[in-house]
Image 1 (cartoon, rainbow, N blue to C red):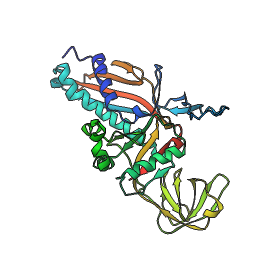
Image 2 (image 1 turned 135 degrees about the vertical axis):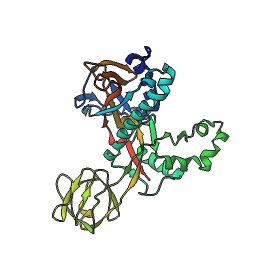
Image 3 (image 1 turned 180 degrees about the horizontal axis):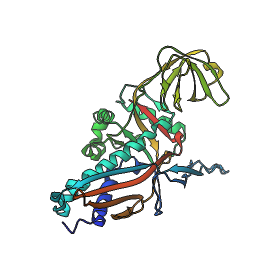
Image 4 (image 1 turned 45 degrees about the vertical axis):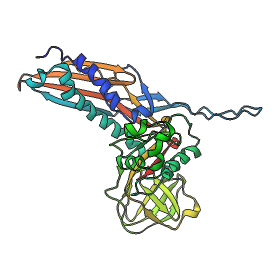
Length: 360
């Protein structure tokens, strides 16, 4: 056995690799403490305040402090467990990192990115057309405009795009000619850099929103209740949180899952329905890629270190708001060594008005 391959050594090698492969959590508000937790714990975290700077014209403009405390459930554990053969255990530290630790941490980072980007369902604001991938500066400007309209702070804005969208942007003449402005870093790194006050990235985990049981047949809106739910007549199917509808000439986002029952359903929509929306045809807008533009305070990434596993060789390390636990165990019955690497986290939408979906 390689005496250098301890749980402590592996954990300290693993954590920087995880950090370097995280996209979405690095761009949003993070909440971390050294208190051990377990999956399923619900903790209270403080929302970051959001302000807008104004021009002083002789009298100060008092702003409400938009902060408070929210409950976040630590409901996610990303885990990679592998069986180690004598061959892997005989590797030196550098080769073990390349062959075992690095692929494991990339897989964990992909899961964390995917879980975070699924928060798009909480964002009712959108720009673009389902099924038409963003491909122009107009798409970038359209998303930025919605952030501007909602008074999102100018510092700390990011965009996370699908690989198709980022490929379209990368060949835009205005961005390809970036070297004329004295910088080619974005071109060398395969990104589009900062455009319209937003730092843009891509993720292979950018989600595609789809509904496997989308409503069938003709639908009409015929009423609304005091809580803002719309009464829709139809045949069968389900509305899923994140679905988009067109009612008359207006666009709406579905804010909760609901199923048709007896040719009828009540669904929560954003924006709230008004009387002028009644007795109009409802059109389901279908599948789309959920690219996101957002301010960092729109979402929160909450992590806590897991307790070291009992009855096994286990080590926990934390740094810069991230934590990993490494556990090694030997099964005498099978004469096999198992390596397990995991991390505990949860996500929360804090200010949905500080984000926008750009459809693809």
